[in-house]
Image (cartoon, rainbow, N blue to C red; front, side):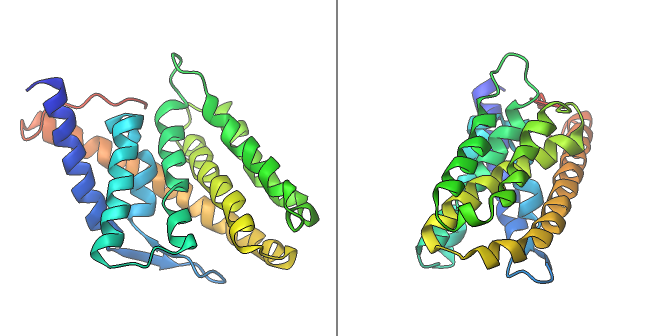
Length: 220
């Protein structure tokens, strides 16, 4: 099998699996309107297997297809939700690669500036401390949990910076979100790391049984 055919095969497999997982609710965090699905754990680490470009294509395609099938209204919130996870995919796929400059670390720093440029954001500057976590995680990027934590907070930074300008949420709301964010992102990091381990061992097993071709993992 040629390399491009193998990439397309796994792109299809990951996209179908991602769509299925997007339909499976996991939990609704107390104090939050966020409903988790298994896709929230699966999507960020997809780039580790597909590479950053194919990983982003797969995740973006799954989310758009899901919205189209469910006839989801294309509101500002719907559009914003499409993009944060894509930055998490790129972070997870590239942060451990010595050959690649970690430009993704500029994303949470830009999010800090964008958030603080908003009048409401300047009332809660300490909220942006969350977005320094991807930089801290970079120092421990060979640790799976820390890499997962960096990825999920990179996504969080993009979403937070966009959300404050789109909806002008007051400082009281951002203050109330702090404990929710801590619980939510820790859960995401554990889920991303666990998903990576499950997918890695599953693919290795299927390759050993000659069911699927062996897929080189971009990052370990």
